[in-house]
Length: 261
Image (cartoon, one colour):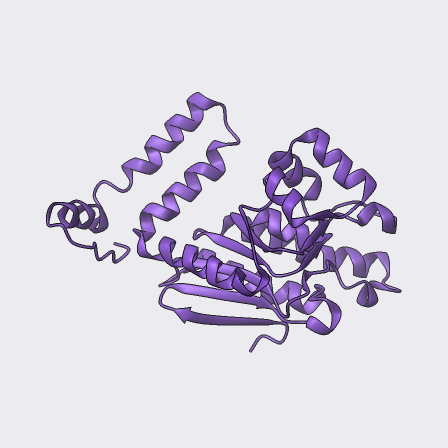
């Protein structure tokens, strides 16, 4: 059983993953890094009935404060690099999860916490949440992807301001800059996220996975190559049972029953 995360299935096809170390701001220690890595790898290998994942933090104040600096205090270089390798592998695995992953940012997301938000497919945030990449104020720099993911979201000039000052910014600024898709009242955050996740779960799961894959890889290509990649992804859906079901349901004026086949 995981010790630092909670994994729940509140509704069919929906997985809610909660970083569960509220006493230290849900900071990531080595154990959490290993448990998240194992979870993401399991979803890559066999998503099974899972069609959408929600990632959040325990409590109502902090989503994730980044790495656990108390655990890091006194680490040798070898120990630090070993832990960071686990975090890097977790980041890369999260990027490869085939089903959508939504961040429900229930509170502050600093350093590695913000980097986790940026690696998710999209995010909703509670009003009052604050965001920052504070690494330069601690003698290091973002190493969980922040210097690469943030500019792709907010643009190079804004990313430089955020990273080089280390200053926090608000949920409203995060919305304006594209870091989050929606700002919710704190008590309504999970209801809003779960409603969106449920809408995804009701769609054809193979279609959702192929569309996510096409977007993720296509934006790294020039337009002509991206269009070719899209058609390749599209073509793999033509012979699926879900495609036949979708057309049949439309013509029969009923809700489709998608089985992921």
